[in-house]
Amino acid sequence: MRIVILGGGVVGVTTAYQLQQDGHEVVVLDRRDDVAAETSWGNAGMVAPGHSFVWSSPAAPMILLKSLFLRDQALRFRFSADPHLYAWSLRFLGQCTADKARRNTLLKHRLAAYSQSVLHGVLGREAIAYDRSDRGILYVHRSAQALERGIAQMRLLQSDGQVVRVLDRAGIAAIDPVLGAAPGIVGAIHCPTDETGDPALFTRALAGLVAARGGEIATGTTITGIDTDGRAVTGIQTDSGHVTGDAYVLALGSYSPILARRIGIRLPIYPIKGYALTIPIGGHAHPPTVASVDEHHLVAISRFGDRLRVTATAAFSGYDVSYRPSDFTFMTDIVRTLYPDGADYARAQMWAGLRPMTPTNLPVFGRARYRNLYLNTGHGHIGWTMSHGSARITADLIAGRPPGLPMNGLLACEGHAP
Image (cartoon, rainbow, N blue to C red; front, side):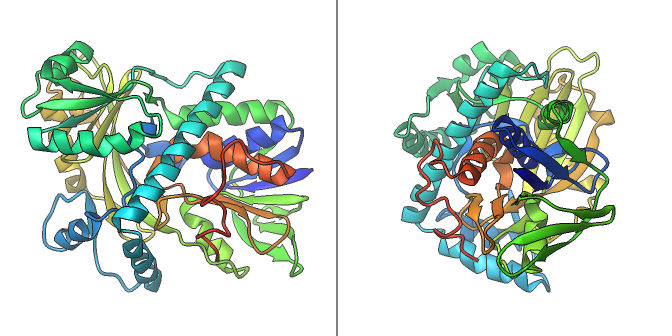
């Protein structure tokens, strides 16, 4: 078939790759001048099944309430005139029970682990350089009590096959001597099978392979509408003309619900703004040697070759991607404290972008309303982690094959229905 993929982020491009592997002709549409220019550009770069815990937990309502009055909260909620925010928030709060958080976390972990295995299959076939590190990720804690809570929480993922090591300061130092000596750190949970790499570099290299094999990567192409005949999608309207195919995949991340509403599909996706710094290491002698997450402040630090990527914060601010230098002060202070000689902090590049979050923190898959329209969207803050498995699932659904992962609880008709 000829299949048109709406969206050129990591989810859209991996979907194009998997469909092309199945023998389909693929077209990727994206409004930016290059693929992976938005959410896929500025994330932490962590392929992290070990960080699959959902945000919709019993603790989340109090965190959001505190954020109305306190600064430097990991989740920041602000009142808005946007009615979609309140509809989404009610659904989010409905997921914040212990039973639902456990169920959603296990589903998320299974998808993340499956996706990592698909990624490894791609790496076995393709030579792609993207500053990969497979030394695991350290989830560090600042008190003995917090570490014990983290260990207890991690047992859920262990029960699902996640490899976990508990480390004291000496154990941290054996992996990363600078982090092991940092003030305020008492211990860490090490997930040695987690990994990191620059998702934008990966996505652009993969898009190059798709194009070299006959696929069309139509960047600089703005989607303006979807044509339907009531039963099927008949084409995509763009500022460069009309694009048609036999099937279509909606993979526009945070922008998916805007386009979907025009054809009568309501998606439970809301944009949550995150902040990122990309910092050159320069001549500094003691940069990180392994990725880490400060679990107290929820600041993530990854090393991409000669750069650091630092990410933090989840702000409920609609489609606003503006920022001020002061928005990055807190995360800069954290990384400088942990790695005082780690990078050239004065040359940090600032960025803010949107994460397409669902109330369950699970992406939306499957066919929606029209017989030839498929969903692959709503991957939240770990779209890089879940992208490859999501792409393979979407290709299998289009082919009419059972995916390699049980889909109970993951299809659009099971909890994500319009």
